[in-house]
Image (cartoon, rainbow, N blue to C red; front, top):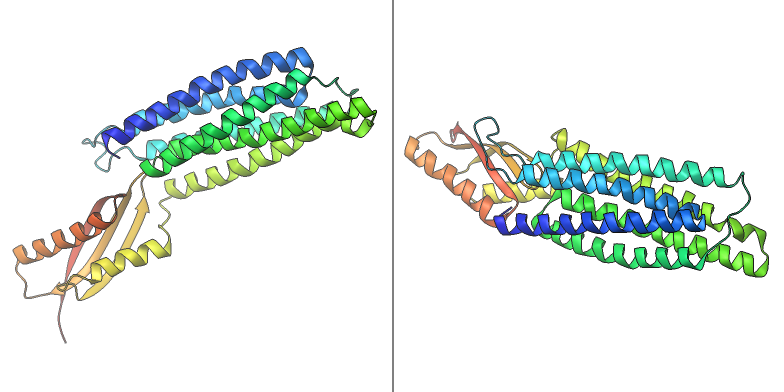
Amino acid sequence: MNNLNRSSSLVAIWISLLSNLLLTGIKIVVGLMTGSQVLLADGIHNAGDVIAVIAALSATVVAKKPRDVDHPYGHGRAEVIGSALVAIIMVIAALFIGYHSVLSFFHPAAKASIIALIAAAISLVWKQWLYIYCMRLGKSTKSKSLIATAYDHLADVYASIAAVAGVGAALIGEKFNIEILSYGDPIAGIIVAFFVLKLAYHMGREAVDILMDKMVSPEKLEQYEKLVSSIPEVKRIDRIRAREHGHYVIIDVRVGIPAELSIQEGHDVSKKIKAIIMDQNDDVEEVLIHLNPWYEE
């Protein structure tokens, strides 16, 4: 990730942080004033988002550090750790929302408020824009922490949709005296909890896969193999492995080349392999190459 991309990612995360701070205040205040369980729970969820975005911000700052003696492969996995922390916070928020929504069924339905509906609608529009903005930028810069932040915004979009539907249903229930609709607020809260848990699972699984050095997809590995095989001097691919290291990929290749080639010629072959892979894959940061002797017989 170049300096311009890192700066863009940091700006996006700062915008997310300030937005979450403001939305947290709005939702909690309006939720307390109106007694809306789903809006209050969503506000607490946003408070967790503040912690999650701070984690993503810290991870992005660490990930931008250059390689050093102790970290020769760079600091890319800091973003993956940040992504994992966001997933954990989302799980806690989902359990909190679900728990309080279930408790609401054991109490008289709270009076619905048009103010709560407006607050939820504002959050929905705002979070949808933040999701699109962060996801597009995260994919273009290959920033794991920014993509995790985008998914966190998407969870908020689901929460806001449920809040709008729940509060709206409660308002309709009060107006037409339909008792079941009066509990639309806590029902919406349970739906929110489910979607937030689903997103957290997706994010957490991806982070664990990267931290455990899971191989890249077979399609990408096949692409790397074709590039290596296109070098005339490469007679055999003994092994090729590739793993994500945060926002970049590290490849390990063992190839057989004619045994009669000199050390200099072997070195030139290594340079060709590295160049052809990195020229056609912007996300590849390092290609580790081991040469084996190949005999025609």
